[in-house]
Length: 355
Image (cartoon, rainbow, N blue to C red; front, top):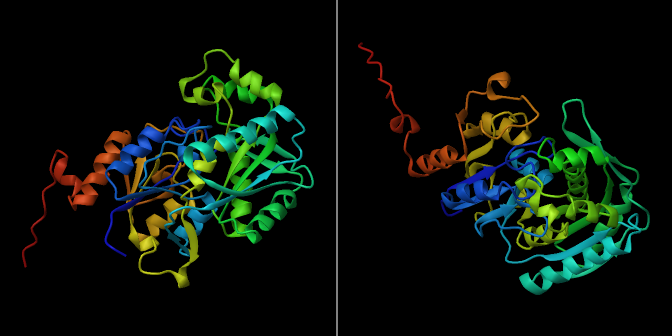
């Protein structure tokens, strides 16, 4: 492909990241990184902001399953001008107001963004999603009936959908939502949302993203929660979660089997760097970068409930920085081919070895 500077930005879901652990609060950092790249790849969690998705146009919205597959060199990414989106709604949500909100959100984005929605299918059975907190403090979850959302997603693919948006109801304990709104705990929806979208991407091989359906009771609790942590404020003004997902999927790249990739497709060898929280280094993208010699920029200011550092894993290819401002500087140096040691002090001396 034409030589471009392409980086990746990862903020794992459901681990209480201080930047990116809420709704859209990592977008300024993400867009700063994107401003010094030709293209920046990130997963939905980084930029989803309820009704808002304010990522830069040079960003690629890649679901986590495909992101891992990309780093395992199973797929390449192909840019698209526009996707035809199919939507799956959970029949387990019996709340008319919640479904009305979902439909109004879909129409608002269709009207304002010009996205193409080819069909909306309801699941035959309730998905039965339930959020669960792990011992580490992160959130995952379970579903009672995974086939409920997989089956309509496959039907939408048969009808011509090139991307799938899912909205399902997830049961969450009120105390965890309360802590989240106060900025004292991870997003309790995020972990299970990632699992649902991973499963759908795996089955359909299409770009997918998930948005929670919330009940009338939850809508009222969100919107009348008082003044919340600024990072959670987007939810407090209206939980129209499908909005950000539809905007992200509009131009989400398609996953192409690596052996079918063309010269213009993005492959792992085109990646110049990866940025992630300094305490969340244990994912497939980070370990793949270490193996391939791709710089991993760990941001210390982005605290998480995890303690998986480059030091604890023995990673030798990590550059640890204090904040995203410094991370953008490292990317700019890499793009210009500047040794980052040359802009730091003290400046290291080279040893001279005589024969």
